Image 1 (tube, rainbow, N blue to C red):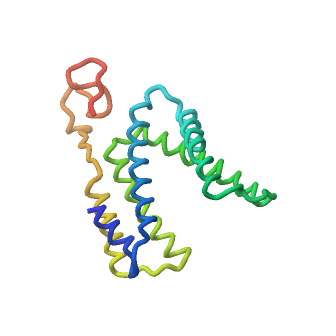
Image 2: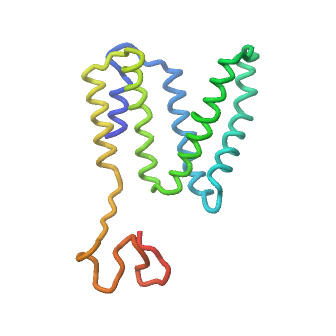
Image 3: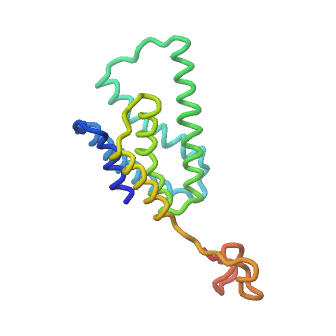
Amino acid sequence: MGLAGVALAVLGTGGALDRAGLAASVGAMLVSSVGYVLAARWREGADPLAATAWQLTAGALVLVPLAAGVEGAPPPLNGPTLLAFGYVTLAATALAFACWFTGLRHLPAGTVGLLGLLNPLTGVLLGTTLDGDELGPRQGLGLALVAAGILLGAPRSPTRTGADAPTGAPAEGTGTGGGLPGRRVP
């Protein structure tokens, strides 16, 4: 449902899709998905800030030579440009990724996958509010399908608390259970 909503939302109110942009979007989604799986696999015992720093460094080592080959030398740097680079580097990249990877440690994989649906939804809404893009009925339906898909797909974890919990046993998710000492009930 969410993917169908994304398709409706990005088709816009008319015109053709940019094939290069669509290919880049699909590529980014695939690379992000692999990254999320690897981050989940390697998260045990890793400091989120250190893991983020290494991932960003590795990405830069791949992208800088490619960017230099395609775009050429960077423009001269002045005060406002350096401030903008500082903001993008520290707040919009390092802090954002540190928060994201810290969140990945606490979220189930199904939830992380659903959160990816928010990217195109956010892009459409930002394009509408900041760039004056038109939001037609087809896009509105797409955004509604994305939201419904996220809500319906969100993992549910029934918990028993208080009077619903068996006598003498801790409530689910609050301690040990399952008959094995030290094992948490999911």
